[in-house]
Image (cartoon, rainbow, N blue to C red; front, side):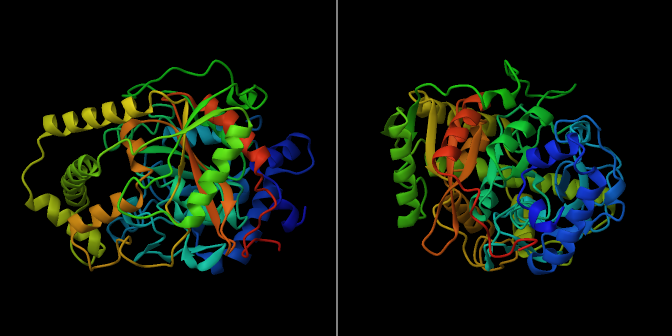
Length: 477
């Protein structure tokens, strides 16, 4: 197989070739290495391509048998492998506990061949860190790949691997998916276990999954990674059938709530709003009932939750640094990370009861606003990928801690809300700007109903296909 043929396949397609004996997992790993060697110097997405990539273990009969996979340098761990969380503070750290996520990955046949970039601690939705530098967007290297699953999305978009591990605590799967032209699902809270050491990350706000090229890959990944484990605090109803079978099921008529107005302080770019309107028209032509939805939450209430979470993370970071015998200062933390830490340490202790009540009330208000609808259609981001740098980066020293959190909430206005509520939401690359940049649109489902998201995403992929769009930086081209 030539490199340009390799990059033309999604993960499901490559697994099918392996199953038929037309290619081996070792040969696919060699192709991934070749793509990395040719492309990564331009995009800086992969920190480390494993020396033993061609011989890493994976189940021979898994659903994604033999497919190259990449691990985000944050969250789910591979025992004994480096995990530095995009931070100088964790330079050289190697967890000794294997995550359930990567146990599932190997059981599903995936071969993890490397580690991808992330901004420090995944705090930013941009794609740079002092530890690893800037990750470029394959569609335009001067622009952000999005974060915090920055390297994962850039690597998949550029053809190094067809699917990669990602995580999302406030948009970190969906942002880079939108800006890199990929499919990025943030599953329902409890759908996928991130244990044994990350089962209740940030009150369940953060979830782990993948970025990929196609809806069928999203469905296959749900089948590979879904399921609970002992100690999981969130266990939800399991599907009636494999998600791959949902691809053959009818969608039925849906009530669709469309977000045509901004939910935060950042205005929608006209091309993004146009993409929302065109997709709403497609859904209407499919026979769905389409109506507008007003902003379902108050930004001030979201800010309360975000600031309390920041304060709690500061305490946790202090304890972790102490256990490692490492200082927290400008030599180990980026400017915004240090300000957030100092803000949390200097403030009054968080009243956990009040914080939980704020979260409960927020979830109730959003749930009540969503109740009349089966799905929502929103922009993923209010704009196409911006240039590198700026106020949304943790490397930028110009903002205070509170100003950074305010800017973050305003920019990612359609995303973090569903991390709080736990609803599943997927960004689909349904449109493109006049300048050739991807525009992602978000579909939000009812809690626990990834099945409907799989079916409606399949329908939209057929109606507004993206397979033939190619970034300027692509292995084999």
